[in-house]
Image (cartoon, rainbow, N blue to C red):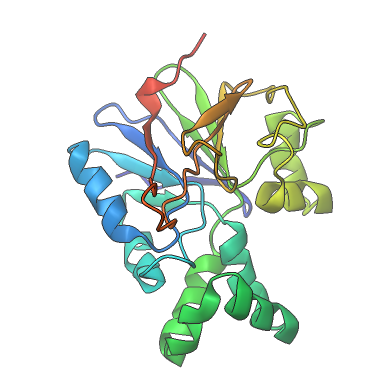
Length: 237
């Protein structure tokens, strides 16, 4: 596997692979056995294939601690999700910590030893806010929640580099496009893939060239589903 080229500390670019396949997985939320099953279903080959994550690897599901071992795999690449951001914020903000643990799925943290907590912070602090993947047919951007409606992809990644508050907030938290308040796509890139907002029908949906693939992996209501999207399924002009 090739070493990613760091554009800046907030965006990572991955060059095209000439052998193997690329996939993007939706919000895992601790459901790593479900993720493993999806990889087996598509005959994922860790020697040649890659998998990119929209973030939210932790909280709500049964095994958040497993995120560390998955992040150590050379073929698995994730961007920061809002739940990872909450883990980082909890270190220095007692109120944020209480809210995360009591209401947002962070209760597993209480039962995690100090050494593992330190390792989690170190690993997650290195996650970028966005990924950019070159394919045989074009470029795919990956970000947890969304891109601001008035920003092209190049402008967005430049804004992330300067820690622009609006760009960072949108990257981690926005639901406007996913919920229908924005009906256009993102210019300057072929496709963008996001998670964060669970589709009402538990199926991926698309707005312009932006694909929302959080389908509720952690929901224990008989309809839980984790989307593993092959980039070859995307249509390029």
